[in-house]
Length: 209
Ligand code: 3PG
Image 1 (tube, rainbow, N blue to C red):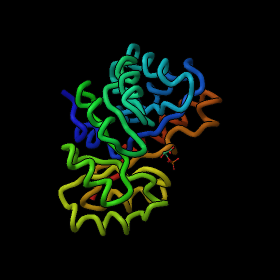
Image 2: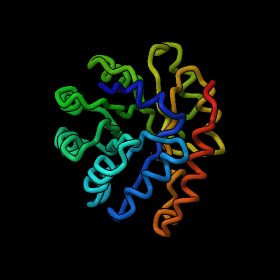
Image 3: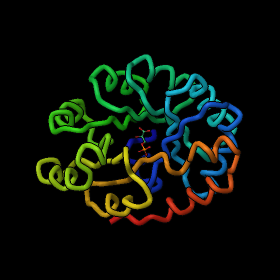
Image 4: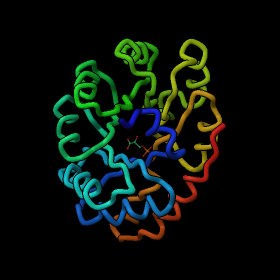
């Protein structure tokens, strides 16, 4: 089965995707895959999100569709039913962790404090999203956590961009980063898949430390 660490290590960047039109899902996923990015986080922020995950899962076998913005056990179940193969959440509750364990859905839960890291660790999770990364302390926070939580690997997300992604990826406790910059809303709306493929290719070539 797919593990959270596999999701993190497949590419240096997990794209955070917001889709308003199910017709965009498949060409967008193909563009990202063509650029070297297979792990795709489709956020459950739009009414079309679950249908978009279904479409990618059905029609783009080279991609691994995941669901972002999981906030409840019901979200995890809905994502799983749509064909999501991993989940990402903006925070952590044990109820969400339990639901994902029951579904065997790898989860990257969001944390922003030591107590939240410890709550996730208590439930067996060691691969975590740091959210919102820039706003909650950025690379300095990750360096501070490396002492007491040196065995935890993070996916910083929130405020990560081409300008700072390399700084995050250079850290020993960063396995990958997440960000929305690979899928600009205007490029998606215009169907500019070539631009998205190029952004994915640049992102896929970022180096880890
Ligand atoms: C989000 O909240 O949409 C994600 O964390 C991505 O944030 P970003 O737009 O700053 O990359």
